Length: 87
Image 1 (cartoon, one colour):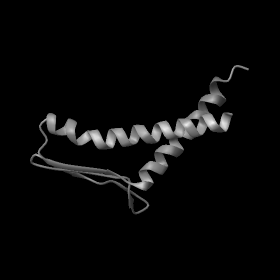
Image 2: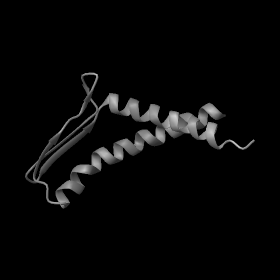
Image 3: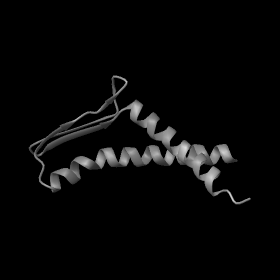
Image 4: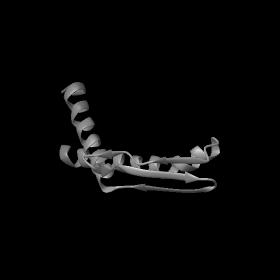
């Protein structure tokens, strides 16, 4: 059951990553950014991509970013279990 909960926590972090990456351009346009491009990479692969030019925008969440967010969610679950387990 503990492993199922850790996988669920990893999936929650993955969906949170998707939500942030896909809604970030809309928030940035509302804040007044009109020319912006960002595509950070890790081990030579992009984590995500955000591009804003005028009123047009695009964003994509890449596989490496999804995998890292899933792993961070699983690690955080086990860290919380290790530090806050009172049984």
